[in-house]
Image 1 (cartoon, rainbow, N blue to C red):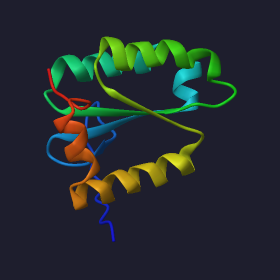
Image 2 (image 1 turned 45 degrees about the horizontal axis):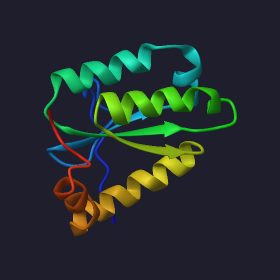
Image 3 (image 1 turned 135 degrees about the vertical axis):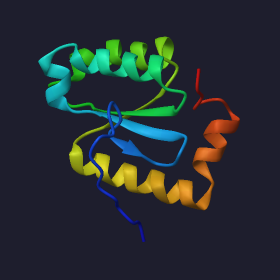
Image 4 (image 1 turned 30 degrees about the vertical axis):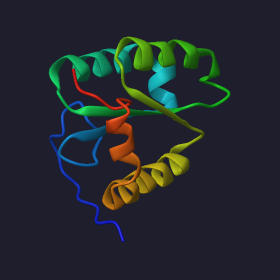
Length: 119
């Protein structure tokens, strides 16, 4: 069972999985609207020592933007990128990430293998 806590004022972050790992969510609308989401990701990376996971909606509409987002997130910012088809899939993924974190399996492996790191 996952306890969900709503909190205002998270700043650049959309979800906290723990005190050192957070999720930034980029929706289809964010991708199509322009570069504001890129500025938010860069501000997060520059201002935070937290490990970041970026969840991006990869749809037929956003397919043309995905390669550039992947290069930015993974190669330039050194963060984990997880594509999803829609918000429903994103919620399932976040639930799984929380469950995995609680059991200590997946996120510990990501930290140990330096897939999640802080700069």
